[in-house]
Length: 330
Image (tube, rainbow, N blue to C red; front, side, top):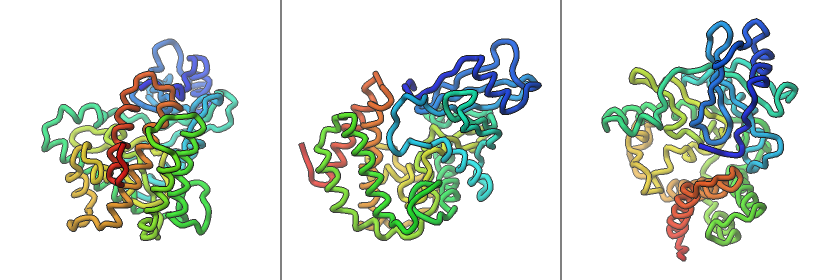
């Protein structure tokens, strides 16, 4: 996926980054040692082959002159912290952090090296799988997501920072307002009055008060962030959007209130979700979380400079569906 947030670097800069991380004796030489991994949507990712033959993955933050959405600021620090936290507190497989540099001395942006995992991407190969095999992976993903949500937080909000004592209602409503402010700042046409969307969230925010215990929420755990090999999940990647909040906000639950997404039954079984139907308050929370998610999907297309309107058009249609569920029609 093409995006102006992808901060591509020359071979000379990539070599300097590897030299800083691994030493001059392991820095790549010759040609053909760097390959861009093109599947990502936000950061550029390279696979580098070091002089001794080891392959490592390199992730680089956006260029300093590119404006990102409010919640995307400082995401690389969040990802490095999340990777280390998950490795320390769970058995969920994630790439090991090998080196992190926020100095901007050898590159114009923050970067980190991580373990390279040689595996297939579930988002790419999953469509070709027999239904039973795909369901098995979705069930395993639900179980892994439940383990991630088992990491408690001391506050609601960002992993690094956050306001002590803030409630989930306060934090989530601020998250929505940040997204709406981003859209207003760039004049993004979301198809609806910004004030109406803001009031809608505020009017239904009582349901958020049920959430009193913050836990790690991965939030971006779609199948494209899952690596598989030999019938098992071998790594989960892209943890930059993690925060402490309500586990019902996880991507795996989105389809419970977005009927055009694939049914989430296998994920829910793996997660161990209650056999009972969701309560009205839980359903309302999930609908609010979908509004937040789809707003991002609409607005980020402008920030990332998309030239293909497919994501924007799909997200606008989904936002219309969500608004209709709250009684608002065009």
